[in-house]
Amino acid sequence: MPIMEPYRIKVVEPIPITTREHRERALAAAGYNPFNLAATDVTIDLLSDSGTGALSAEQQSAGLRGDETYAGARSYYRFRDVVEGLTGYPHLWPVHQGRAAERILFTALLKPGQVCVGNTHFDTTRANIEILGGQAVDLPCQAAKDLDSDAPFKGDIDLDALEAVLSGPQDVALVLMTITNNGGGGQPVSMGNLKAAAAIARRHGVPFFLDAARFAENAWLVTQREPGYTDRTPREVAEEAFRISDGCVASLKKDAIVHIGGLLAVKDPELAQKCELLLIATEGFRTYGGLAGRDLEMLAQGLLEVTEPSYLRARAEATAYVADLAAAGGVDSVRPTGVHAVYLNAGRLLPHLPPARFPGFALATELYLAGGIRCAELGSLYLGELDDGGNLLKAAPYELVRLAIPRRVYTQSHLEYVGEVLAGIAQDPERVPGYRLTHAPPLLRHFNCRLEPVS
Ligand SMILES: *Cc1c(COP(=O)(O)O)cnc(C)c1O
Image 1 (tube, rainbow, N blue to C red):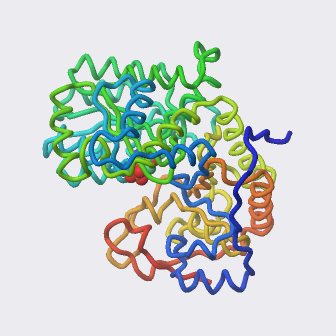
Image 2 (image 1 turned 135 degrees about the horizontal axis):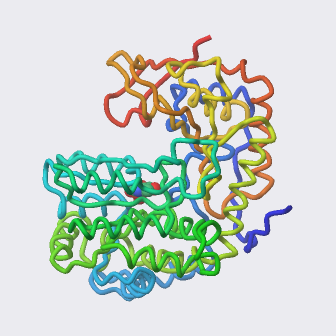
């Protein structure tokens, strides 16, 4: 079945077509770390779905209407109206990206020694909590442990574990639910789970927040998978999710389909006052928050477009198509397929490589060498524990590779190409070499490390 994208292409950008020799040289010069590659050396870039989407004609023209007034710009009011309509939150501010919203909210809400509990924290979210002397506790549901099962809502939080933590001795500052659960394979959270978790938090008097970077994709999967929601629109589901929560932080580089932007929104007026002071001190005045008027316009328009069912359907189909091509070529991925990415099971494809040789990294590297495809490892290089010499002490639970799909960017032919390159690697997986670290900085290792192949 062809994927019926509900748009056609008006502006094109050439992509680099390179030779294997060129890629071998580029990757060696990059210390084998894909984050060090220049975009001009990458043919299909699946490193991230963040800020990499294609703007619509309506977004472009909204951008031209941007009002760059310092305070009270027209564009701010448009942004506020759209976000208020979507979320219902009375206090809301633009920020330059998601992590700025995290820093402001946690600074206002979390004291040293306190805990933030969630389904699975995103890496910058965890970092912002730890920088403030707090602790991020992940409580993924039991179903999340089985990568191969088709359980529909593996992004859920474990409700019994949540109840236990909130009843226990730890001082919990907030509950934060990430929708969809990026750290947990891009799996969705059900509305049933969200409501039950909100009720538990409320009973214990603990604020309940969303990390809503992919609120529309979560809502789409709810309409496809959750009994009681199959006749609702994604917009209606998203509206409900925001309204049962006390506020949200969100990277708008994902589901607002823009290149930069974020959102902080709260219900509580006292908390709002604290947040606004921090915002003005570090991001910008309350009516622009580190963004230009044109960004606010494009964000507002993107937030209206992203819940269109025809767009979400085509996007979900494209991602599922990549997973199907991978499976047909002999490469398993985390089931069921989500919307923003396919998580390949590299550990299973490359059993000749132990975790200490970073099989996920090896597969990601091979995708680049074989086809100019850039993607990210989510395995022992990113999540494992290393000693000072870069030797693996404790492996990650799984060795995965994330193929993130940018929004409205690649065509079905591009995806077919990815499937073909992957199938080629899977024909002779034992040829794929392992890697060893030659340089491993202590913090945010995966961005800055360097490696070399081990023959
Ligand atoms: C991207 C992301 C963030 C951080 O947002 P930035 O815009 O990159 O700062 C936080 N949480 C989740 C779930 C994300 O996907």
